[in-house]
Length: 125
Image 1: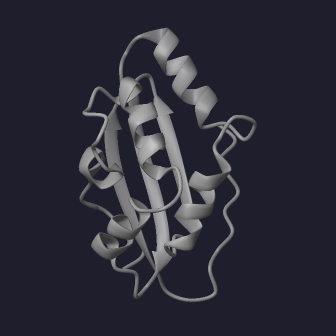
Image 2: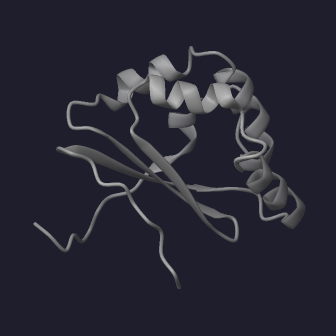
């Protein structure tokens, strides 16, 4: 395993970790991966994520299980940011589009799909 290079922040940040299970249909998983790739992602979605204050977002996949890691400034307000994100260009269209992979209603917002995970261990206290 090679690992992933990270750019560290110059200050305190908050980290959110969430879980989502998508369809286990191999073709749908392949398509879902495609639409999250650099080549096929929607620019407006990336721009909106940054616009609401998110510093970094990563999604990891194992089969049909996803873990999303979100880093934001220490004063970030999750609920406010997600409400604002839902109003930005193409966000509702994106959520409807990916709902076919996620097995959820087309009108569900991102924060209604992804389940927050609880940190149970941290090396540095």
